Length: 303
Image: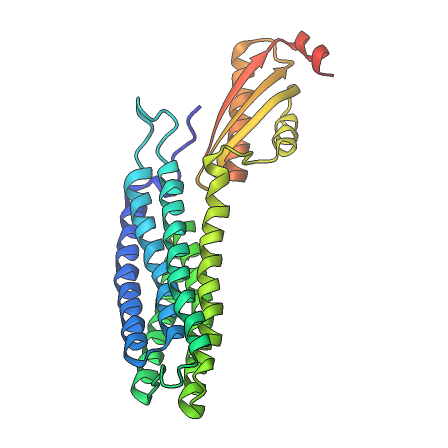
């Protein structure tokens, strides 16, 4: 049975999320470009690494817009299980881009360390003011997106806002280091900051891979014992076996099972399967369950 329509599939919800994603995308791109400009102006690899890290926010916004466009359509003849895996494919592409960006930041940082270029970084008060400005924009974006996500009950916006809040701490560290370079002239502080920030970019890419790879390889989405326990809690269920699940909890999960009931007719058995589907939907979000009902005598083979 097809899962009931959820708020995530409503046109008003989709248009509201897209509007917020476009706004935050514009702000995030502006932040990224401003950080990059400051990095090129001062020669600070740490600031340029932070710009690359801010690029992840922009890429997440783009990914969200792509998801809303390509993964939202209902299943069709060519894609009977829907289009949600487009989201995972795009996310892995973003992870690859982040890995390349990380390498491009770490390479010059290591070279600068060995060259001992004391004049490489020219930090100044104007650059610091610009960094504080972009920090303020980051804080605004994170708070705005979190409030919008809470209002629209959007897991996509809430997850993106959480990552933006994490970026704020990195930017604060870069600003503190930049102040230290300006006050002391210790150029090696830039390298000491650039490498950890680049590794943070690499970690962001790994988090993306870790979150999406199980979806692509059809790993178990919901522990099978949880599904069995839920099915067995429904009155009339005698046995539940050959349980499988795949997908991504919160987005779309497909569940298959064989069910034995003590119902004396097909209509009662059908009501039992509907109750199982309702419980799955209430606990795990969008779930499409395929339940094969077997005669009660089959229970002897699965005791």
